Image 1 (tube, rainbow, N blue to C red):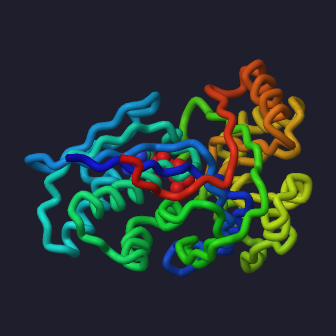
Image 2 (cartoon, protein in one colour):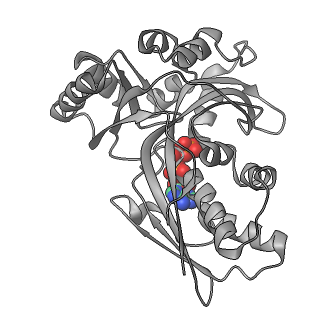
Image 3 (tube, protein in one colour):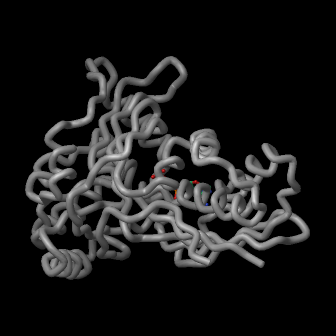
Length: 298
Ligand code: ATP
């Protein structure tokens, strides 16, 4: 017997970052949109906890207990006094260290899969609580759709979305470490007055109306200058996507994946073709959002 859960990637359509707090974390106003790129996590009873991973980036995924999928299984087993003896298999389609919350997706997926396999029937609140313990982006991977995250990003408010947005993602040929990007944000901001992060009302309105023009005008990412500083070639990818007809382009989360908004599916295809031909990225994927959160599919 086994359980498989499908979990989406995310793009941050707004990422407002406050000054570093005394504990080193940053307060955020983080508007997440789940998009249709998915990892699948399959959990099967086994003699002991082990992890395998398949996919183009599989060699970059840790297969020990630092993997967020393993940590999720361990935390749930611990809370319910169970033996975490399972085989976790990750079919990975979300880029690793790409700013699309791939590890977080696997954490949320493993949690939901183990809950179903073990029949723990944890409440939604308890699952969200465990997700928040695993990492700031993990609760959103469980919930999907669109949401505003505040605090470290883990306090979530679900948002209404009035339509489908078409996206093209350009994957870079190497990853960026999220902590390194925050350190660069702190370095670039030294001596400046960093305002409190607040969600943009025009942006929330654009999502609610499903209006791509208004969304394109409102997207923002405070981590983008830091990501560009560490990975200057991303400026070429952003320029190539815009030249290919994207309404806007931005770094996704801490990067280095770049995200391009297109007016419709046909225009997205042109943006994808332009990006592929530009030679400024490793891979290009076309998809749409919002996508559902972690879902048991088998
Ligand atoms: P975020 O968008 O949440 O900042 P990310 O998409 O940039 O995250 P991840 O793909 O989650 O980055 O990977 C970041 C690091 O986390 C990896 O380099 C890897 O060492 C570690 N990691 C732990 N568990 C996983 C997992 N299941 N899949 C991928 N990476 C994992």
